[in-house]
Length: 181
Image (tube, rainbow, N blue to C red; front, side, top):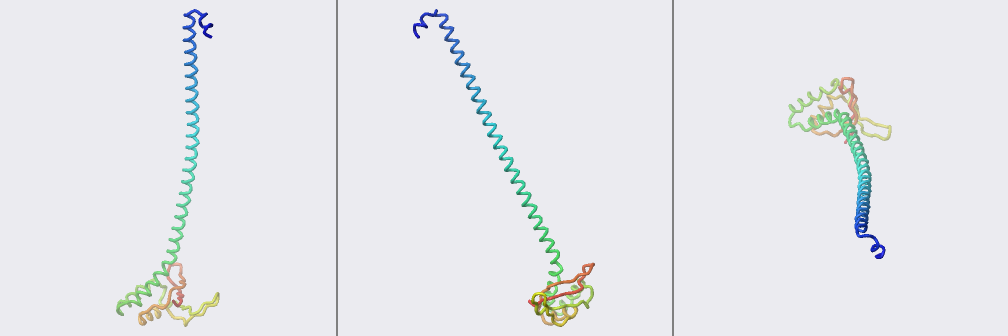
């Protein structure tokens, strides 16, 4: 190879070296540009895939959070509905306990008068369940609400719990069913 190079004039050799150097630099530059495009493109695809995965994960998390929130709201609403249905029961049981725990007769009478506003009349029936077996139910002798409230005042104890209340359209209690505690 030295012989071939020696046969060329020095001017041509110098030009060929520059030409080869330029070609080498152009090839190197092209390789660097192509490599960076490939890396950038791959990076973008990876980024896009990661972003897509992150977006999918974010959507799934958002949907799960929305579902959980809806379930919590439904549970809260069900609890509120149950509490609203149970409110008259709690109010009547509270009156019964206040009457039986009253420190004196005047306080008990005031509580009885306050409680009577929840009932349609003072003569509504009060049934006390003494035995229940499936659909068979045995009751104690029926009484009225005013007699039962005075019984609580005299006995100073509340031996029964509210099992069922019948209400009219105005929200007044028309029948009370109690059960032995």
